[in-house]
Length: 230
Image (cartoon, rainbow, N blue to C red; front, side):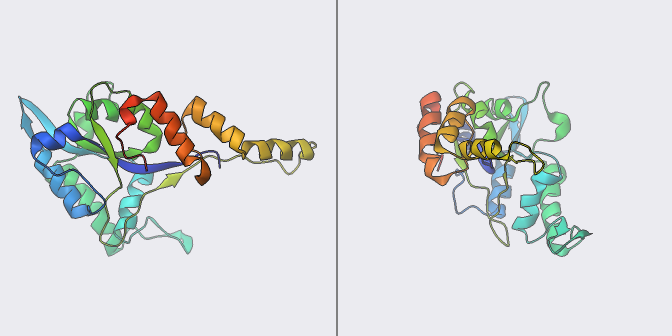
């Protein structure tokens, strides 16, 4: 694996404070998640603002299904769907209500021109955004935003985020196996991951280097000094 990317909840502290809503913490469930989104959705100075943002697509909805005990597919048989089960439907209904019932998550048609979730989070269009740690450097570049990071809330069944990576591989038909193996060892080394952290700011896939990554990215973005990177 080359790096780690995992889902978190970014939030604009000023938006929460202005709306009189308690900031998210590790005790949050999907009930608190929905309640906070609804309370922050209102007209403000002639502009409609929303409680939250959630990325679209099957992959980014999976952790919501997992939180409710559901799934898109049967882990024991990938040819079978589980989207029809009561747990999966409860999760999809929860998301449906945020978009179409209380409309507390930013509707796709209301996205401003040139939309990026971190810019709209910074200008107060919504108070929180569920997305990946890959975007931390973009969030950190938003001038004047006082933000923090919280875990994705706990569902009725469990607390679940998602994790992704890309990976290195060696071709079994290679005529340079010894050399390829040496390169692979380098790509799993402390030296490589430190280079990657400093050049691309990606989270290393070695636990022993997480503190080094935190030091690097806080050095690059002073706004991260008080952000809960742990």
